[in-house]
Each structure stands twice: as structure tokens, then as C-alpha cells.
Length: 84
Image (tube, rainbow, N blue to C red):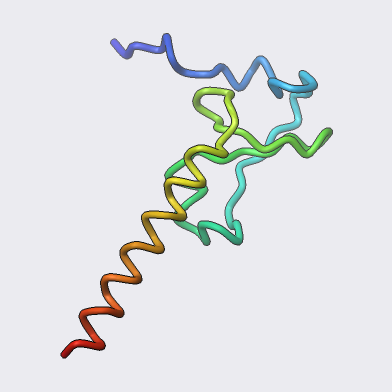
């Protein structure tokens, strides 16, 4: 049996406007294809509010963390390539 206390019920609709027209975001400028899947990024088609489909909360903190981690990883890779 799964614990669903922290899971947002997408049947409730958009947390901002209540619309039930919600779609999963497949691609973003900040995360490409992988980022939206990791953060369960969804979009309300009525008000264009984008949020975490599991929790119903904003993805802004997750987007910032994801972007910083990608930048650090790329920086380390380029640093080691340059020092070789």
C-alpha cells in the first residue's frame, strides 16, 4: 500500500485556478527533456501556471537546484578536459 499523504491529486485540478485541463510538460529551456520528467513538471492550459504534478507546489526551487547542479557538473567536466 502506497503512502499518498504528500502526493497532489491531479483530479483536484490546477492549484491556482482549479481548472482540470492539465498537461505534462515534455521540454523546457532549463531542463531539456530530463528536467521536467524529474520534477513532474505540469502545466495548466487555462491559466498557464506550471507546477509539480505530484505535490501541486511551484517547481521554482527544484528548477534552481537542477540548473545549478547541471552547471557545476559541466564546469567540472570542462575543467578536467582543459587540464588534460
